[in-house]
Length: 176
Ligand code: ZN
Ligand code: FE
Ligand code: FE
Image (tube, rainbow, N blue to C red; front, side):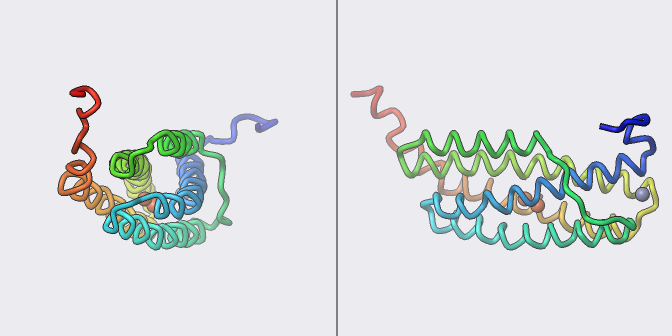
């Protein structure tokens, strides 16, 4: 809390705030992904999560570079939104017994994370353009593109195989 006035005054301050929020979010995602790699049963899904973990290290590094370009030290501030999404993912995963159903659940939770990141990076790119931060925009656009690709990859996996396997016997209990 600021003692003298509000901490965010200018658009530049707000941009900094959002970068710090994303820096925190990426670091939490970095911590959460190994668990999802482990919990996934489909080998393709395991590979998708572990590929995205590698990309996430890169996303953290890009934000550090962006802070540098912005003339600031990299700093994270709590992001209750990503904490909530990751907590829900953990809780739901803990409640699913059937491995194939769990895979479908993991994809759904991961896509919520990707969409959150896409929303945030989309805003950072738009604001960065407005503020004339050309190099930062270039860096974060690359990350935005990778989040988008990760999301599409998950949709392909879900619709191509995981959901099909998960839905097999979905109504078994009801029919018996
Ligand atoms: Zn600025
Ligand atoms: Fe990311
Ligand atoms: Fe991501």
